[in-house]
Image (tube, rainbow, N blue to C red; front, side):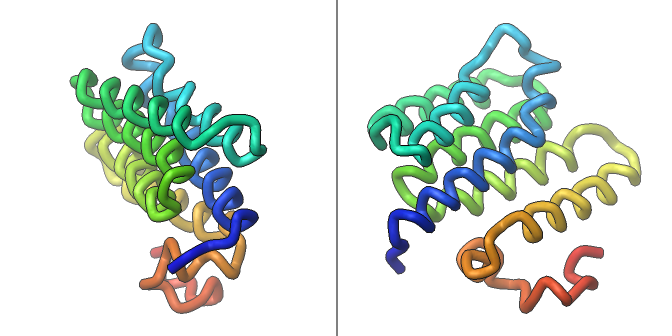
Length: 152
């Protein structure tokens, strides 16, 4: 499948938004490492047409290196989400991974029932904030936004 440039850039922005919603899990554990946060910024800069795909690749690799260095699973997932957000510029399919790792960051953030609820709410937010015509690309398993049981 091939996307037009406008849709590809919209997916990159959405992936950056997904990653940003959970980057705090990384920042709280490793506040001195800004590589994942930079990857989110780079994703947005590419979407605005300000930088090249090559720069997003470098930021993505750096965010994934930060993830490998993280000892906490939630922090690791948040950094991977940021890395995939930046990688969306290279291949739009990375947007789905940015979303999945954001949900994983929430799920891995502790061992209580609230995490499952938070993860479900995050999935719903992701779905609702993705342009309708792009939903089948990222969420092919969901039939429609009216299908509320998909989010329970």
